[in-house]
Image (tube, rainbow, N blue to C red; front, side):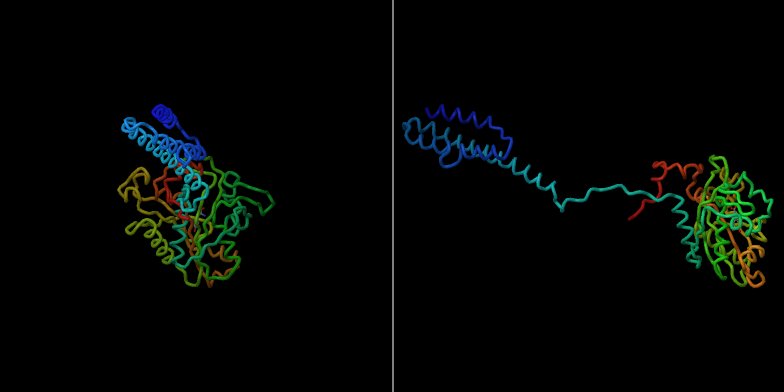
Length: 345
Ligand code: DAH
């Protein structure tokens, strides 16, 4: 009977759950082609009685629609997944996979800033070795033979060689000597680098840190040039209105020598924990290059004068970012490092 066949095939269609595009094609061949089931049922319909035709006509048409709908749904399902498979393989129009950018180390940021300020004043950047001999680190810089800085307590020695020990440099002033030995005045350079001292590690001291040395040697360089240069530097780095003051000091390689303070960047001179309620914080040592140092480097101290200065990058950075513990700089904790400027490639 036609009705029974329609019921049976309808059930088959409703239960049809294709798992591949090939299943869908099988379905089409079975039901929808010109020799398929739908067509054969329509052929059969021609020979049923007129009363039956009235009821079966609609049933048969519904059946045909069911078969077609099922087919188009199944076709769509597999067409979409086929297209997706193709796209993920090598679709060059898809957006790229993002990757995380690193950030600059705060010490690199500040070093860069210092270098930029002095570059605009005509200072070149010079570098020297971290493993240094006694001459460049001490003797040429006018350190007396018994000076405590040469002591084991301060200096990491690499090799003891009577009279010219090899050590990790304790300051970047050694680069001044290398620079002056290599050429003729005028010299106008800043020299950033890492230095080492035999200190117990704590929040306030570390066995290695970073300095920037500055040197300007020419005819007629005066202490006024030194003051004006450093004053300009401070205004650029910490903002207009930052005050400076110079206090007399002593370094073997400068005469006269001074230490320079700036008005506290945190409390603006009001007094706080950082400046120990004085309103001032020390940021660098400086002075006029001692004539002995010039002569040690083969420079005529009657003709030339110069000034020099040296600052710790960690100290400058602490004042800028209010970092209270030196150890943070070398612990590589991403939570700390990611707070600084992101590297733009
Ligand atoms: N070398 C000194 C230090 O490590 C810093 C310094 C002071 C450098 C005075 C200079 C200077 O060039 O003139 O503490």
